[in-house]
Length: 130
Image (cartoon, rainbow, N blue to C red; front, side, top):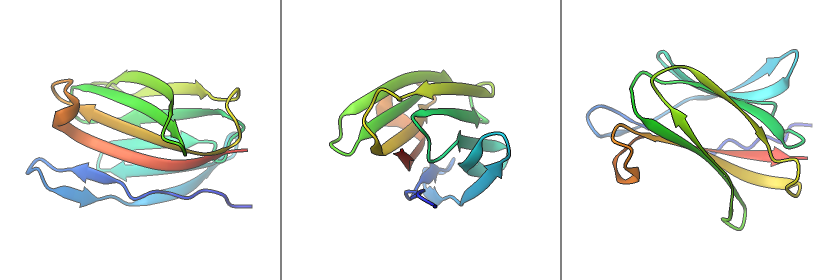
């Protein structure tokens, strides 16, 4: 059963324009199905999707800044908040297994200055916790 619903996501280019990105579905034998976005050397991978509430977010960016991983339920309530450094590849293991089953939005955003008003990357994924 396939229950992944990718949301439209955008990269902000160096010119300030928003560019559509391609989303892929991939299979990792040890983790199952996941979602991945790649643009040049930059990537974001989330697996497994769907999950039981425990999943990994792996990322690599080509700029130095501060980023955030925020997860929201369908009512718009923030259920997870984490900060990331964008100057080196990273991985976050997130455990939402105490949250109700359902659909969640995972948002990854980053800024060169640490200011949310000056985002250089902002992506949203829709995911299912079963």
